[in-house]
Amino acid sequence: TIGEAHGVIQYGFGLYNLHLHFARPVAVGSRKFSIGGSFFCGYGKRMNIGKKFVECCKADDNKSEAIVAIELLINLIKCSDVLTVRGLDDMINDAVKQMRQTDKSNSSVKSACELFKRFITLAVLDTVGDFDGCKKVILERADVFLKKISGYRQLIAKNASLLFPDNARILINSKSRVVIDALAYLVNSSPNRRQIHCYVTKSMPSASGIQMVNELLKRGVSSTLIPDTAIAYLMPQVDAVVVGAEAVVESGGVLNALGSCTMAMIAHSLGKPVYVLVESFKFLRVYPLDQRHIPDDLKWRASKLREISRVSIGECPQEPTEPHASDPFEEMNDAWHKVESQRVSIIEKDIPFIDYTSPLYITALVTDLGILTPSAVSDELIKLYL
Image 1 (cartoon, rainbow, N blue to C red):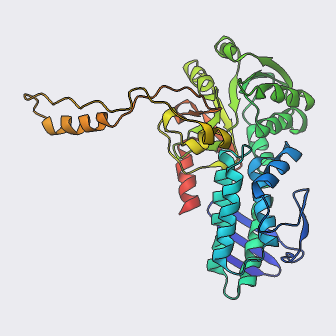
Image 2 (tube, one colour):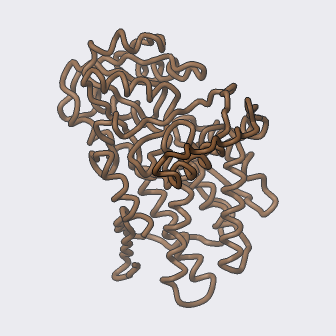
Image 3 (spheres, rainbow, N blue to C red):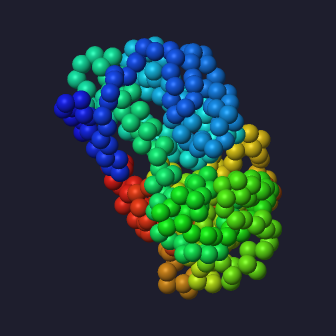
């Protein structure tokens, strides 16, 4: 819903109950503007959005790729010359497709763009009048959405500060911006400052753990880089496992850097809590059952997805064996043999940079919405998309 009174615009949509004062109107026709501290200008129909997306991601490594994608979409809408809602929708979809075809894209870009499109397109239903009025409301909603999600890390940092005691020993896999901000807040900015020490895996083959340690040390957080094979050795000594996430799926499980699942399974077996620090715009409507069921567009970077070719061993399905004549459940066996005959034995020759961690191994998801159990994710997704 949308309502206006005394210069105040209120929005209600699922997880996002927004209330913002607008000091000035949005400059729809402007070709030059600043959003989130980044300067953009000169957008047009023929612009290579994918290239611009990569450039912006490289220009500010501390900014989430999802937020960069939302900023670009907002600027594209502001500078577009389309005259219909359908044209605007097609333009946004094309821009998202271009960004998804770059190697800088990841699962969070997909989830954030889906949420962004759903949020702003409600303006079409709420607006009566010409296209310019509709576009103005869309831009107002878009700016509110961007400001809202840009503050999520601070909320997560405050929520995470409730979980760790003084002198805690934390085990971390790979680099995560939200984890860096949360731990830096705990050490430097929290009203009740605490000392912690982090063990960070090197996270091969990406070696992102090296960047993680450097960032933590730069923020004043005591850290040690460890080999990936030292997880089981150090696990009895740590108080908790902390990881970020590229996406949270409908089951409450997460997609994150390769090795996160291994770390969570070992922690679970030794009774150590596993905390996932993640923004709610990374909630994604997919439901992988296991590693093999992760969608390919989430598992691989775009360039790898284009070149990869899976080689099957024994591609031709085996002939189903006949059910035993004496079997009293012949119909059930026949159906099962049909299922088995469709299976193709595949030997993995390429290993992705992410894996799937089951909700069974996750203690809690620390989000901007609060500290959630994995089972609460489905409820939040229902609120979001229904």
